Image (cartoon, rainbow, N blue to C red):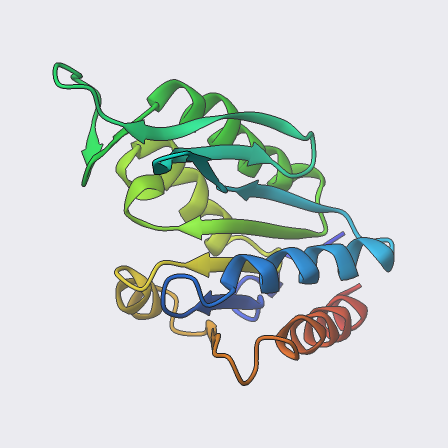
Length: 189
């Protein structure tokens, strides 16, 4: 499928922007577009869990196997789970769904998608390792990157292309990212 010498030239797309601007929507539309062209996209999404009192936590979903778990939830007083802000990380689901989904995508997917790379996802060593392996791999990767970690990732992955979502460009970005990925995939096959 991909040639080993393609690692240095591999396409890394980082979608970033302020909270609530539409990063996940851009990501999911790009994934959908790629699937319509017959490509396999594997990886994770981490949608919010909402309740009557607002955000309660985050799911973690394997986008290829459609398996869902809980990445994080509002901490209880005596919880010993790793924390990020008011949220406790569910290490078991982060590993058994998140890391597993990314590792599977490395084996079978044409494109790896990660929504998102942020403090919660990076808090679990096994999930962090899977994310970094995906970003170092020969496969093209599209990742929503939290604004708190984007600068560190750009230093590590200097060849990454950064797409900052705004009200002006958020409707156009899915097609732009899809076009660039399709062009890349055709050139590297």
